[in-house]
Image (cartoon, rainbow, N blue to C red; front, side):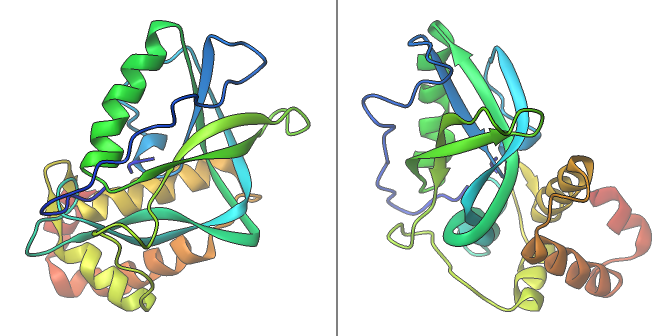
Length: 218
């Protein structure tokens, strides 16, 4: 979900030649979003489902010098970290027929060329039918890409988020929209990393800007 960074000289990562197809339909592809894609996919799709993937945790470890930051002040956006005990909630979008090539073309620019993300096949469990998992394509930023920032204390990440903005808006908007999505998923959707950063931002926000300016960012 898109929630991406741009490097000075990025090395584009292309989607796999034969992306996973869902529901046994050779004309359908599911795409899993866990960052900005949960609220702004910006591509045509036929169906969408809220749910989760197991074996991964969401982390604000990817730098962003385009959508939510700049070359001088990179923002922080999310990626997936392999975690045996992890569970990450998001939205899977089904694209069909001509939607497939158009969506992959768009996401290759948004997520791979500008974001430094690679593609990975994941197993997605719909919230309403977790006993009917789907194969989906996810965009994951690995430590090998130039924009990768890695771990940092929650307070440091919060400070960076409060200070940065890019072509898609303020980094704070990205954080708060993702937090809003998690609340809509219900109490079973836990993300301690995200919650800790939201709490740190809440404590710091009055020091960064007056209340009216802070509210204007949301």
